Length: 289
Image (tube, rainbow, N blue to C red; front, side, top):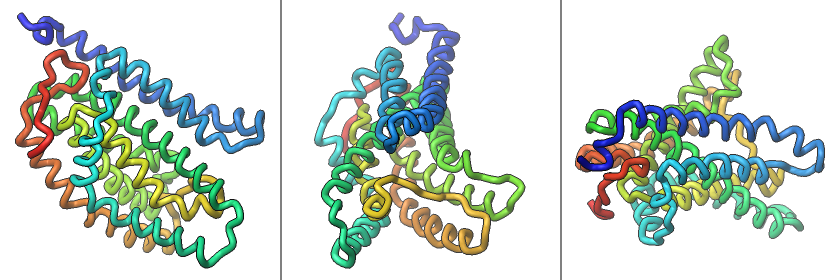
């Protein structure tokens, strides 16, 4: 009997649940740490908070069996960039806006702020990939990924969780516009997450997704950082202006994200059953379709 077959369903469920618990803990603890850190040191706590999340997420991820997913392979980074390039279009437009700001306005601290922004989005990328594609997706995959339907379910649910986390603190369920804008952002981020779930599982590697993620975020946020020295994004609104902005922005991003999302869905269909890094028998899937 193989090692994987010798594990009882109960043990698999326990590991899967624990991975979700640590993912929630990483998010909650870091969120609670924001105000105390900023009040104590009078600094922007963003990078510190994201580092706390990475530590809380990455240790159990490795302990549960994710060590092999932590290796870095530049070919895998190239694969993800090539696979998901349509979703980078909006981010690239954000970078162009930031460059225009540099030429149109006086930013004496621009080099310092840009360096800060790079450090910030790197921690964001690693933080969100270890939590959502590491603990959340792999935990769900370990519980449900013994069939093709289970793989789809794990990826879809992990993507939905990833999307909802972006709006959960702002959505007002008593306000229709708030619900609509939150739903649009959840779908848009969920498609992004679904594509990265496929890339991680296909490559047995988390770094390609992490590099893509922090490049995408940096392109979008660098203009905002030049003004505020902090990543700030309001995804949920309560007025007509916010609704129109969300319909145009998220709607466009959803349309652009459709091709890689469909490609990822087809990729899951063609993939051998893979229970992820927590499984002793996760197959090494080919890196090219």
